[in-house]
Length: 218
Image (cartoon, one colour):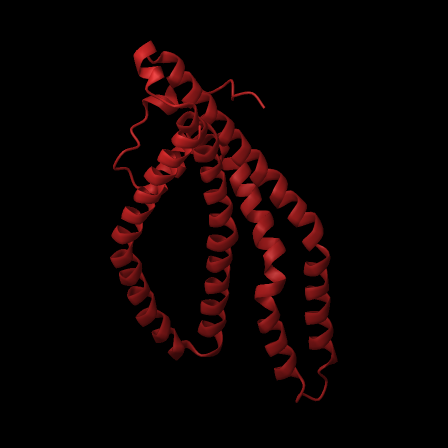
């Protein structure tokens, strides 16, 4: 895969990444792939909906059983879930296709940018880099961005879909229990915020150790 001809080769090198929030960095890297990411997200929501909606569908069927004629409700719910399950295979194919297209393009551009920066270094600066460290920069760092994107889609979108389904279902059936979400969400946000500094420090230390080990091996 060749770099995107529409992109300036040096724009990834000129951007200031240090002290930038990770979300803003990811938005900068994938700003030319928003269309593919949006389509991939749509396919992901459709393919994941059966697992999330199954408890809601089961509850509807249980509520319909005591009625004099529960067959229409059971049939409608069963038909809807069957259609969603049938759509799982093509939507999963579309999700993987568009997400891979976006991540591979960004991964290729990152590698191209790193190689270009190494070519611009002076002879002394280039010699200061060991082959192992260069391999870590060109291969593993770009793969880490791709892996993070997949984790965000698999875990992040899945969690958002499950939370949205739970909140909507609770609001329709028992709005009083929405107070539970109002209390737990701020607590979870504070917990994540308190752990972020320690996680960043450990990740940075692990990254340095990995680069040093790769440099020695290389």
